[in-house]
Image 1 (cartoon, rainbow, N blue to C red):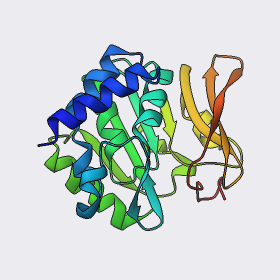
Image 2: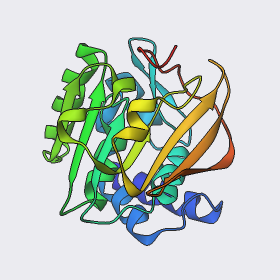
Image 3: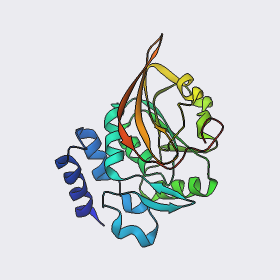
Image 4: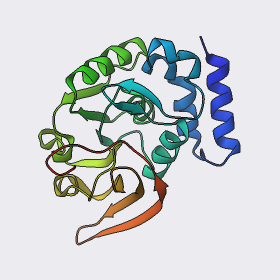
Length: 212
């Protein structure tokens, strides 16, 4: 179901320059985005726009998922933490790339976390560990991580996320106001962190001790 629409979505993302990595393209062709949105919005699932998923949250636009996965340079053996699981789509795409590694996704809203688990089961994506909690604190129990991806806008980079990132790891996070942010890529070495601005974006606010 919707297979043609999914392939066309990926082709559009490639044509517009949002999607450059073959492995990300393959993952986005496999993951059925329509299973991660409310039933009445299924027909819009393969349009390139965010969609509401309840609890005042959204599922990211496909081009943003593609950009973020590309920027993180994911490898199949990586250990990945996602902050802001939502209904699970982004984490499921990551899991298709990280075939031999591990994916942990933290969601503060219990109802959404439950939806994410159900959606992933339907999508055949059972390898993602969904945790209910304050994602601004990361998830120290399974740290350190090769990659950390934050899918909500923060006023600044939460210190626990930097601490839980391996040396040589990458952290991607929207930083700015509640309404518009810059997508910041952090590279961590043994002695310092380097930041690169990948451009403006707009995410829902990151709520928690180190968020809003």
